[in-house]
Image (cartoon, rainbow, N blue to C red; front, side):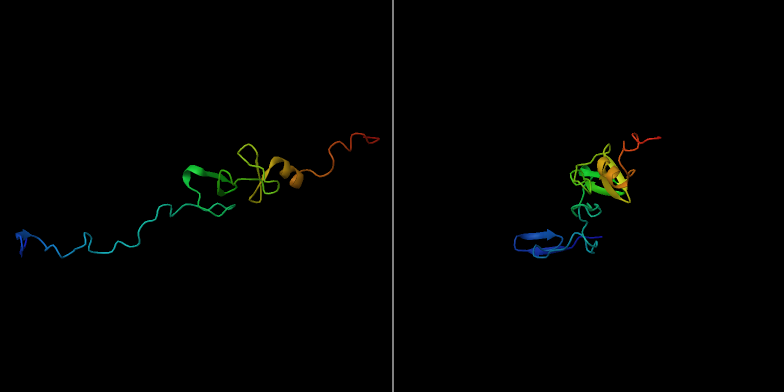
Length: 113
C-alpha cells in the first residue's frame, strides 16, 4: 500500500490535503453512552439515585434522606424500618396501624381475670 503524495504551496506532503477533513471513525457508533443511564429513581422524590447515596428498603432504592416513615415522616434506618405491603413505616406507626388492637393494660383489672 502506498501513501499518496499531494502537491501543496509549501511542498510535497503525504496523505490528504490540509483542507480535507476525514473522520477518525467512518461509521456511526450509535447513540452516545450517557453516564448514569441505568440509575434507579427514588420513589419519594423521583430523582436519580447514584450508588454512593443509595439505600435499599422494601424492594426499592431510596436516597438516604428520602427513606422516611410514610405516616410521621421520621428518618428511617435499618433498625427503625418496618414494612407493610411495600410501604416504609417506623416501629411506632407500624404498631399503631397494624399491631394488636385495644389498650394494653385494660384487661388486668377485670374481675374474674
